[in-house]
Amino acid sequence: MVVDAPIERLNGRGLERWFAAAGQPVRLDMARSGAPARSARDLLDLAGPAQVQEYLDLSLDYGPGIGTERLRAAISTFTGSSAAEVIVTHGAVEALLLACGTAIGDRHLVAVASPAYEAMYLGVEAMGGIAHPVPVWKPGSARLDLAAIADLDLRRYAAVVVNSPHNPTGLQADVAELEHLADCCACAGAALIVDEVSMGTLDPGAVSFGTSRAVESQAVVLIGDVSKAFGLGGLRVGWCATTCPQRRRRLATLRDVTSLANSAPSQYLAALALENRAQLSISGTARTNLDRLGVCMASLPGSSWVPPTDGLVAFPGPAIPGFASVAFAELLLAKHRVSVAPGGFFGQDGHLRVGLGLSVGAFAEGLAQLCEAMSEAATSGPATFGPATSGPAMAEATREAAR
Ligand SMILES: Cc1ncc(COP(=O)(O)O)c(C=O)c1O
Image 1 (tube, rainbow, N blue to C red):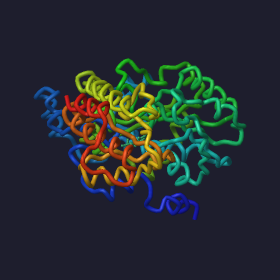
Image 2 (spheres, protein in one colour):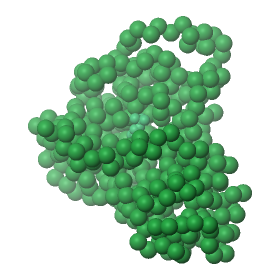
Image 3 (cartoon, protein in one colour):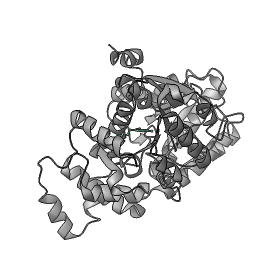
Image 4 (cartoon, rainbow, N blue to C red):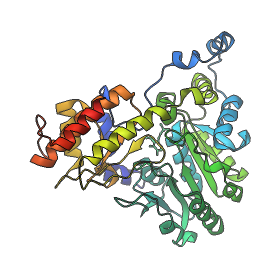
């Protein structure tokens, strides 16, 4: 069966299965790609007493399938779309599924800008499509090369999926290149699905691709969520937005058989978060953490290090001969109780994905351990590392990280 194929191929070896097998995240969780978790109280504290009462009195009946008006209006100020163009979903992961499912018809091929978060391939294949990974990044590069996708014969493709800011590198697609790709997709009758779940998390001045003239072509489907920026993954609130009425109708119809509607309390809390996003921003924290990670990487000569420009992840490639990211991450977790995401899950085994969302103190603690472990592996081999045997540069970086 078509839907079994990608899951069998993944065979429990994907990033999300790895997270699930690891159980409850550790305190120094640098594997996560979002902000630290927030509580309902954190959000209700931002509301006045009348709104708290309104929240407690919410009807728990089915709500509108496309989402509440208030939430869609809050999303539209984020994406630059109009509220009418937004459909609320269960996280970006359902949005991806719906966007792929509605694009795939007579054409089955979907180009996925790679490396990519695994749902971008699985979403395509679960909907009966064929994911075609197109490399847009290689180690050491400070840009995403979308020309590799624009040069394809897109008339053969149902859709193109691009993630910007990009997980795992934190690089942003160049707007002019993305606009050109949108034009190519529109000419070829393909959808351009742009996942921007981490937009504005590191770079508070970043703007959604929804503000580009390219969305008027109606080929573009924007995807976002409240999981990454606000640490609200448990609310399961994401969205799709498109200017194309036909696509919206198809998205809403497909959504009737995936999850029908989101819960009213989740939507209320998500709207509160979006309405108060300036107050909830963690970009200052992420920037401080990134600077410290940069110091650490500079102390490992020969490493591949391209700082992210937006998003809450960085993707360093430590200069360690024979480095194996999964084994390293598992040893780091077992010995130091620090979690990072192995680059191997993105097809880049020489790299680690380091989350920037932890509080400054916790990040410094985790980074000090990570620096020691990398230094140890660099000198004594990647498979084992015990007490630090680091050189002076690494010792200084470790002290700097702990500050
Ligand atoms: C690029 C990207 N898209 C989508 C998702 C799914 O997020 P959610 O379903 O929580 O909105 C993730 C989660 O890590 C992600 O990194």
